[in-house]
Length: 115
Image (cartoon, rainbow, N blue to C red):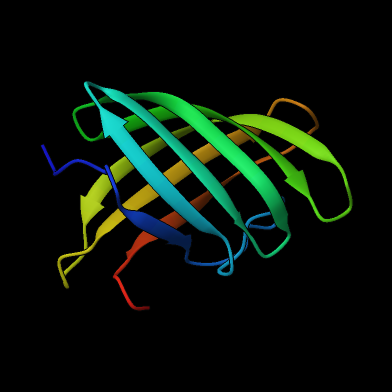
């Protein structure tokens, strides 16, 4: 199993076609005893939260967010954790909106301090 997400910062690689997060969004992860949560903001997102669980290298969570247009949206995501060649962590995500139509895939990668 790969290391804990606790205290790590992640950023999206790109903006997915039906998504709202983009490379300007930052996710601040916490993890304890199989529980995972994060706050996120930046880009089109004013305020977002996710909460879920981790089993091995799989993270499953629900998210809710407020965008710059003043709209709230929510959904479900299953992510697979892996390690990049440079040692950083990556989450490959399969997500689906629950508050509206749409689904997709995306990825977030660890942002090293000072970047």
